[in-house]
Length: 200
Image 1 (cartoon, rainbow, N blue to C red):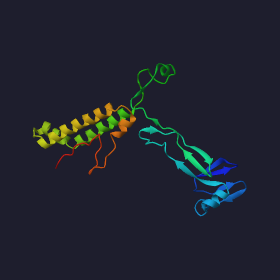
Image 2 (cartoon, one colour; image 1 turned 90 degrees about the vertical axis):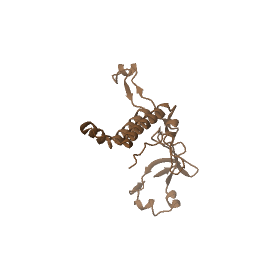
Image 3 (cartoon, rainbow, N blue to C red; image 1 turned 90 degrees about the horizontal axis):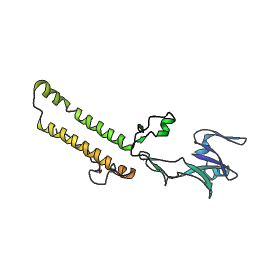
Image 4 (cartoon, one colour; image 1 turned 135 degrees about the vertical axis):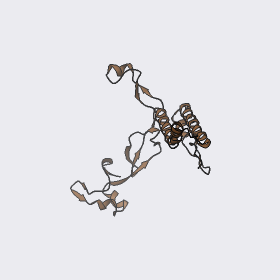
């Protein structure tokens, strides 16, 4: 991204993929690719340098809008302080009910924990679905379910419960995010763990 600086202030932004007009002069989009940095800056076009120091993972945080400033001969875009997403459900308040937004005490917005646990349950259900036919066959034809399958299904349910407990026990968004960070082991592992695999 590029910015036009006039009299020390940023007046326009350009994506760099189309022709532009500055005052009464028109320039092709090649200005962004063929011109040197010095040539562009001589007519007030600066490439935006991003400062992502405050930017955080959007899975866990809400980043602020970028603010742009011109100083020391360059244009810089910077994020403000990021806000952690709510880990618990947000409920409608009495005022929300008065305003017609929802019923007090009911869920207004689901928190991260709810959605992550929902994902864990769906993953467990998907894994169990692969061996559900053994259970159906047992019910229909009284054919024994292999012990390895029974053990595996129990292990999946146990692991699902452990994952849900770990998610529920996270004190804040950083603790929650840490559950999903893989280490440098070979193979890498994460605190949340993985579902067991049925040996063939």
